[in-house]
Image (tube, rainbow, N blue to C red; front, side):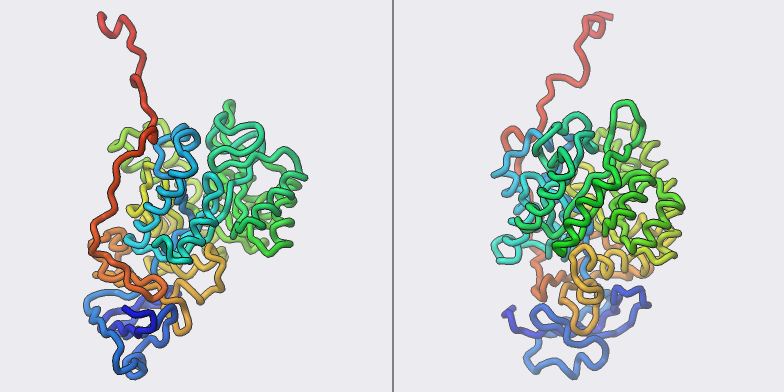
Length: 443
């Protein structure tokens, strides 16, 4: 369609993303990247040459916003692949290839808070320039770590940069790197507050409050929010006290941490999807079963307090952590809604609001300017067969999608799903899965 063409959707139900009940037989009129009218009056306001699409039997709702995605990672099966099998040039090509899958999955906006090789802002700008097809994107650069590392353990170097990590040596380096990242286009500054250490179970806090404040104060002074990976109650509490704006995971949240989050006005993106995929489906792809009980316990221990946080007014965002072999692009972006319903007891409409309206926080847009079906809002819309207000699982089935509008433009859903062959050296080559002992051959 031409860039100035009006589009009128008629006959469908509308879920507006605010948590309000669906409205039946409601029209939606938009032009370019702006919704012009919603409701019966939309038909009267439409231009004589408007493109009219009958969406009877379908639901019109905001496109999904994935607030925790790793678009540059390329779906590694291990940290070894992520850190040592991703050349910079091919990583950008892979990211450009994979990002189109998000649109086909109904995702019209996403946050990529940390990336390998600092590729994020360049990909964001390529999308905005029309060079690469993809959703709206907010981007960070490398995650900031201390020498104690993150989830990759000893693969993280003591200094410098590797993969998605930039290891900080002291407070001065934290301040300098934060300023540099903002200079080079970071929308968010990502901090890896917890890490896996060899003599401890779970993740430990590896930043001090003073160190966290060095980053958050510097970023905020330059108009940039901060986001933190926190998989313990203490790390969540410290992140909130330091002024972190968006907390990922908030695992094992307790009352002290919750009080700090509420007082700070921080948001939380639980990101249960990666854990749940390993628990429920990991056996299908050879995942280590030793983590099943650990991850199930993490969800169980966190969900109830997250419900308390939700009831206290803490904004909850939906993130899939897509980018790993357990969460490939285009497949699991909507599962977090199901998990918010099943584990936290949210209603489908509340979960949809977490995945749409609240996603404006991740995109650094004012609330109700995006992620909602309302006059003046961005024209990012999903038309799905069925009623997500009854069953959010329909949003995980691409076969039900009738239209995805990104910036007011109709995404081609009829195209074949993007497929490719592995790149040379992309996967870890193993000689064996276990030692070939003499006793194994001749017991």
